[in-house]
Amino acid sequence: MIAASILIVCHMVLVRYVLGDPTAWQTELVTYLLVGATLIGSPYVLMIGGHVSVDLLPHFLSERGRERQALASALAGILFCGILLWSGSVLWYDAWSDGWLSETVWAVPLWIPYAALPLGFGLMLLQYIADVAARATGYEDPS
Image (cartoon, rainbow, N blue to C red; front, side, top):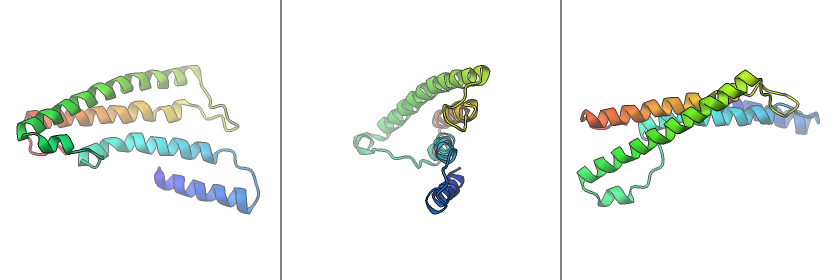
């Protein structure tokens, strides 16, 4: 999705500034692709431990305290992703069942980009559950 976004932006620059023709769909598609890449790619980043974290508090905690803090964070992530999975699913369903279209010349059926919400947050929820299960079973590093 990111590579496609780069190519589309290059096409947009060529068409708009070199050829002098108007562009209608490029900006909207790039926005949808980058948001989709972020939402769908986030569970992988969580899995490999690649997210940005502040380790000041865990630095001063004991090993047991760090485990409790990590478990509390994962449980908060489960709650957060569960809420966003539900609301994203409702939004996607409304867009699909009511035939929502974007208010641009391109008029994209909005259920297509909105599908990234339940998909991304559903995968993130599963990754948080896997992290909690790994901690509960004593697996060394859930990442």
